[in-house]
Amino acid sequence: MKISGFSYVRNGIDYDYPFVEAIQSILPICDEFIMVLGDSTDSSREAILSIGSPKIKIVDTVWDMNNRKGGKVFAQQANTGLDHITGDWAFHIQADEVIHEDALPLILDAIKQYDADPEVDGLLFPFTHFWGSYDYIRTSRRVHKHEIRVFKNDKVIRSYRDSQGFRKYTSVEAYEAGERGEKLAVKKVDAVVHHYNGVRSNVVQNKKVYTFNSMYKQEQSTVNNNPKAFNYNDVDRVAKFTGSHPGIMRKRLEAFNQPFTFDPKKAKWKLKDRLIQPIEDLLGIRVGEYRNYKLLK
Image (cartoon, rainbow, N blue to C red):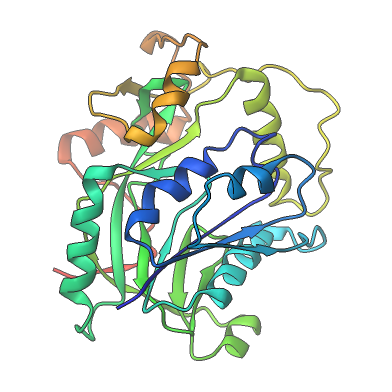
């Protein structure tokens, strides 16, 4: 049984993605790791090479900026990674996601447990979304609770819409022709994905958010001509993080010096979320939750 990790990045240094830590966090249980490197102008390649692992293979790409609608350029990069892996299982880690070292045995045990089970396509992971600093997490209904990150390397599984999730198709040609695909049947594993999408300096976060959003809007320029500091207080709800960070993140935690505090009285809610959130909190369920998977009991 062979496990293949894969990810993608473009100008990860300039946008302060913890992509090196992302790779290193799952590398111990991977037999190979495919890093799809977009046409970067920073030192992302050197950072990947500095890991010094023979498991890592870099695949160079040029992002098709004429194919951004709906984040399809992200899906293209994820699919490139899928096309190059050779393992029985695929482990997708995004450039701002890191797995705790304590979770690796749980993931490996689950892969072994379901390897021969034809009903199981993959594994579902819970997410913790950091916001403003490494001490806070966003806890509102606006962030996704779970997503698929490990699945069997079935060659008809492709990235769905953008690269957040995956589906199974009748063929690659059908996928390219617009087939909606079939949701993957998954088992949940209690291995939390630490999502560090909201921890950067104010200036870099503003640049990152603008560029990221431009990857979904074909008509929007990728160049932000009015850079400003990102306002982390423009958020609905956050809470203190009480868990432990992956050990591989220690240096980033020590180097981060941008203070963040949250005043609930100044929370910025959308009207719909303000009305629904108390109901969700009371019932312990997500009303109208988007689930791009079939959860097996």
